[in-house]
Amino acid sequence: MRNNRIYLDYAATTPVAPEVLEVMQPYFSEKFGNPGSLHTFGQEAQGAVDAARNRIAGSLGAESKEIIFTASATEANNLAIRGIVRGSAASSSEPRFARSSGSRPLDLAPAAPLRGDQARRRSALSSELAALPHIVTTVIEHESVLETCRDLERKKEAEVTYLPVTAEGVLRLSDVAQALRKETVLVSVGYANNEIGTIQPIPEIAAAISEFKIQNSKVKNNYPLFHTDAVQAVQFLDCDVQKLGVDLMTVSSHKIYGPKGIAALSVRHIAKLASIITGGGQEFGLRSGTENVPALVGFSRALELVEGLRERESARIGRLRDMLYSGILAAVPAAALNGAKEPRVPNNLNLSFPDYFGEELLLVLDREGIAVSTGSACRAKSREPSHVLSALGLPEERVRSSIRFSLGRFTTEEEIEKTVRTISYIFKK
Ligand code: PLP
Image (tube, rainbow, N blue to C red; front, side, top):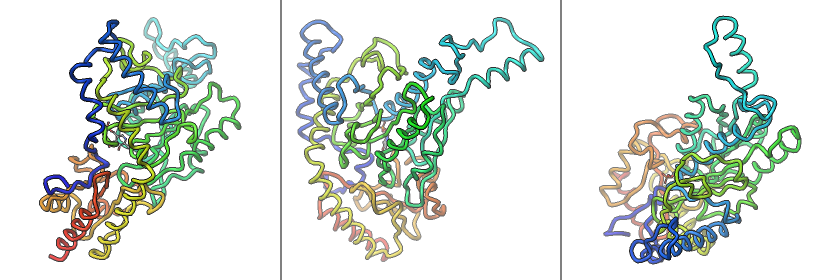
C-alpha cells in the first residue's frame, strides 16, 4: 500500500526493488563510463555489462553470447521477428525467400522497365520463386508481436498465420502442427498472456516443431525457429530456454522490479538473426547503441531476486489472488472469470462484471484508491475492445466489462480484504 493507495496493476509495471536500486546507483555517477571506451572508466562499465549478461544468461540457461540487451520488450520482440525474417532472406540457399536456386540472390529488379507480356511473365516467375518467409503466431499475442507481424505482411516481407485459441485462452497443439510449412521461419507464442495470464504449452509446441523438422528433412537450416515472449512468465515459471526448447526468448526488466528502459532477447542460433538497429556495432553487431549500464545492472539483479523468490512468491501471491477471486464472487456472484483458471500465472485475475464498463469500474476503483486495469497498458487509452478477450469468443459487452487485477511482491492480505470490501460496497449501491 503506497500512501494508502492499493496497486493491483503489477502486470503493467512494477516498482524498482530497493536491492535493485542500490546496485544501480553507482553506475549513474562515479561508474559512468561508456563500455565502448578503452580507458579504465570504459573497462569498468564493460565489466558491469559482461557480469550482467553472464548472470542473465545463467538464469535463462543460455550462453552469454546469446543474450542481446534491448531498450524494451517491444524492441526485443521486433528484433526476434524482423531479425529472423531478414536473416532468413539473407542466409537462404533454397529457392524460398526471394532467392534463386543457387546462392546468388534472385535479381527481381530489371535494369530497364519491362512492358506487356514480358512484365507479366517476369511477375509470374517472381511470385513463383519468391515464396515469402512464413511466421506462425497466435491471435492473443501482445501488440509488439501482432503489430510487427502485420507490418511485415503489409510490406510483403512475410506471410503470417494467426492461430486461434480455445475459449479458455489456450493454443491447440494440432493447430500449430498444421500451420507449419516448409517456408515457416519462426513460430512466436507468448508463454503467459499479459491480459488473462493463461500459460501456453511451450515445451509441447517445441516438440511439435522438432517433429515437423524430422518429418520434413528437406527443410534446411534448422527452421522454423521458436520464439517465446516470457515477459509475464519469468517471475513465476522456470524460463530455462533449453528445458523449454525455445530458440529465442524475450524477457523484460520493469515487470520484475527492475528499471524501465531495458529488456533482453536470448537467441540460440545467433547467426540467423539480422540487426534492425545499425550503428556502432554494440551487442555483437545486432543492436547498436551505447549500453544502458545502470539499467542492465539493475535488470540482472532483479532477475536474480525473482529467481530466488519464485517458488515462495508464486505460492503467496496465488493464495492472495484466490482470496480476491472468492471474495469478489461472494460479493458479486455474476462476476465471470476470463480465461482458464489453470494453467494461469498466479498473479492474474481477469473478471467481467455485470452492469459496468471496465473503464467505468476502473475509475470508480481508482477514486477509492485502488489501481487496476482493463487489460494491456499499451491499449489502455484505445477505445478498441481487447483482442485477447474477443479471441476467446466472449460477447462484446462481456469484453467491455472486464477488469484485470494483477498482484505482486508488495501486495498484502490487508489490501486484498480492502479491495473485496470496496467492490462489495460498489455493487451494493
Ligand atoms: N510482451 C508482454 C507479454 C507484455 O506484457 C508487454 C508489456 O506489457 C510487452 C511485451 C511490451 O513491454 P514494453 O512495453 O515494456 O516494451
